[in-house]
Amino acid sequence: MSHRVRMTEDNQVATVTLTRADKRNALDLEMIRAIVDAGETLAARRDIRAVVLAGDGPAFSAGLDLAAMPEIAQFAMQGGVFLERTHGHANLFQAAAMVWSELPQPVIAAVHGYAFGGAFQIMLGADLRIAAPDTRFSIMEGRWGIIPDMGGMALMRRLARGDVIRKLTYTAEEFQAAQALDWGFVTELSNTPFDRAQELARTIAQKSPDAVRAAKALIRDTELMGVKDTLIAESRAQEALMGQPNQMEAVVAGMQKRAPKFTD
Image (cartoon, rainbow, N blue to C red):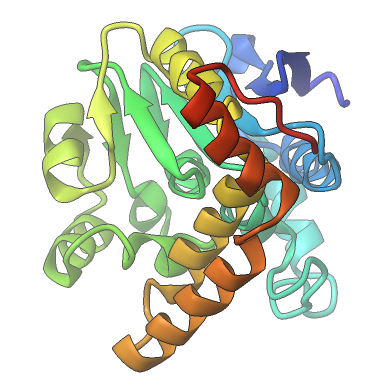
């Protein structure tokens, strides 16, 4: 891992931490690349069952590093970088958020201090977002004459009403954790978001990894799907799980009142 990101593992839970605390974990080009690399590395890990995404120091992330803006702008202007699909459906900047949405494992973001701009979009890529009550948020791109372009438009509409997205995008105003919870951007509030995220990750890691991965894919892929196609996708996912070793182990362990022993 880059010195911008630290990855640790414990009991099949990976913790990915932004480690530029002296800069409030502000996003420069190196950190964006490191975040994408971390996600892509974990995507190939069958032995990792859940992921916690967090930030060192006083904040999750202040968003784009203004000092790095010239470097990022120069990179972005090199022959269609924005339109080039370098990471599946995404460009590099979009992948920093979308990699967590597309990761096979559930991702839980532990958010404190603030999550502005690009950091807000990265947070939205997680399956669950646990925030400290005093956390501040902003879709800050409007302040700099740009739009949220790190997957925010794909991710926000899954969580919040269109008028809320419009207001926050047009105004770039800050909002508090209680509002983020009410609008759907945050899953729950906790005085100790990192500890709560770890607790949830450990709980998920004890469940059948086949079922958890299938559930994440099903929920993600059917969020904007019609009823007919959703029912078919649900049936396909269930058919693929039924009778497989981990599914049978879940049943037997439940009947025997013991902890299941799943294989990855």
